[in-house]
Image 1 (cartoon, rainbow, N blue to C red):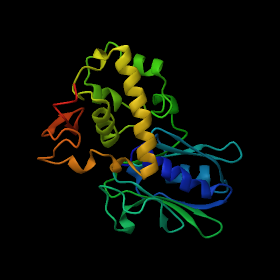
Image 2 (image 1 turned 90 degrees about the vertical axis):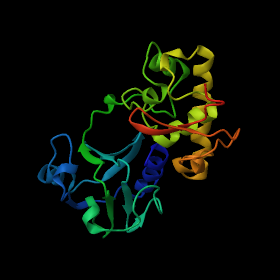
Image 3 (image 1 turned 135 degrees about the horizontal axis):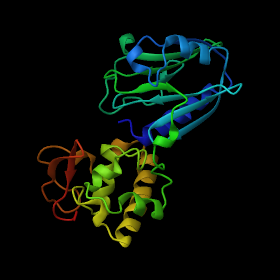
Length: 261
């Protein structure tokens, strides 16, 4: 968290900033600025401009600026919260603190109408960058085609879950969405990505899209049918089997040994 569904909510909230002139930028945490940016370069690039369009690619929120200015990239890590004009875009982000500690404000854009866009990140796992290399990301998980997904998985001995969470290959899926998608599709997250047949890939892509659609309507990546069972001793909501708890791709993973193959 946040995964692509949460960042999409952030994008929708950030749309309210379009056309508002930027008068000040606070970037008190130098480590949070990426790609060689610092307080001075960010101020020089943004102050006097306004955001003219909002985009999302995977887990990145991208805000284009006026007068052929740079694109501002906001990455939220696991605990980043976007706040606009004093209101959090998501009320009570899963796995993040609900406190509004000023020390957690990593980046703030102030507008001439007195409002502000704030990025608050307790664990400092996100980041801010100007003109990011968007091509370093794979296709967005919501748009990936069957042919693209087949190419992403082909000839890979990496665990299926790890391949799906590799943002350079497919952008947007995090731990919760991947576990939910694979549970719904019936695929073992530890199986080799390249072992999927053409029919398996088509099924996975269909399930991925339906999972994103359903959880998007519900309001977040943490609202899947598997979520309440993602705990020690949890049982599969489908068949009642004890869930496996493993580390795959560096992330704690829950799956059903009975129907996920």
